[in-house]
Image 1 (cartoon, helix red, strand yellow):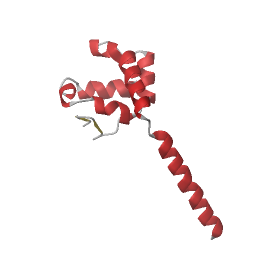
Image 2: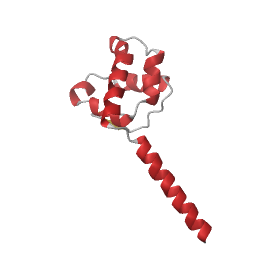
Image 3: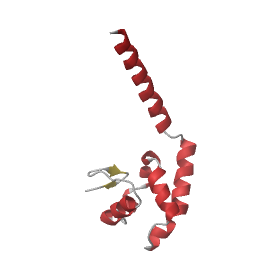
Image 4: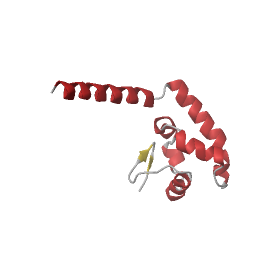
Length: 105
């Protein structure tokens, strides 16, 4: 029983550490947004994403990028194209996922 309790404590600590690492700071978010915009600006002009844009799509924190998608911006985004671009870069987009003002069907 004691080993079970110790194991549970270790698992809880690992989860807490993972959660604190996963949450980016405001400065990290600002940097991620800037990097994503610079890497993916060509996509706005109808070009396919570059390798650096795909890398940003795979590594950027959703908590940093999604707040940028305002209702005004969401109205300009073709959701199906958005999902194909992200998934084409190797990042899965779950159904019914909400990112800013954009909801994935």
